Structure formats: structure tokens, C-alpha cells
Image (cartoon, rainbow, N blue to C red; front, side, top):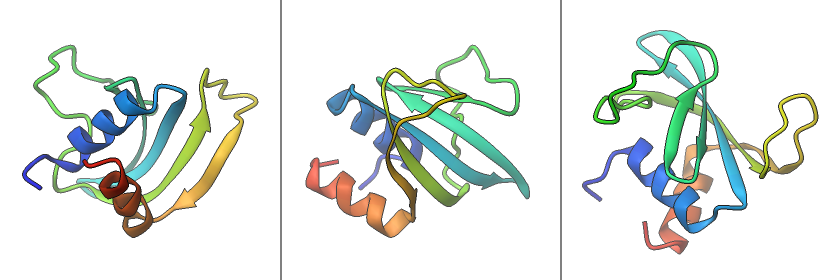
Length: 99
């Protein structure tokens, strides 16, 4: 696939609007959490650029885990569909969704 990891995850949430992905990743040696919902990404720990061409999840990011959460996302009471997904498992879900 030529699409970046972040772009593929955004496309997944477009196909699955009832889900929010909470991605824990290491970016430039700093851990970050990113919420992805309906095709949009936003960092939960640092400022997110207003420019949609600036990837929130760069291609060199190391995915630590991904949580699938039911929408709407309530950070104080999240309804987890699946927790602690590794990249290999998520990649299978992306492939199953033709992404």
C-alpha cells in the first residue's frame, strides 16, 4: 500500500463511523496519543496543526497500541470494543476493509 499508516487508519474510520481509534504511538522518541474519527486525526497530548496536509501520525511513527472505542468517545467513560491491538492485528482489519 502506498498510503501512510495514518491515512489508512483515517480511511478505516470513514468506513466505520461508529468507531474511534485511539492510537498510542512513539513519534520522534516522544509518546503521543492520537484520536482518529470519521477520517480526521487529532493529538490528545500535543497541539495539532490546522493544516490537514501535515500528518498527525507521520509515517516514521512507531505504533505501540491501538484501542477501538465506540462512538461517541467519552474520555472519562470510554466504551472499548477492543483494547491493546498491535499493528499486525490492525493491519489485518485494514486489509479486511480493503485499505
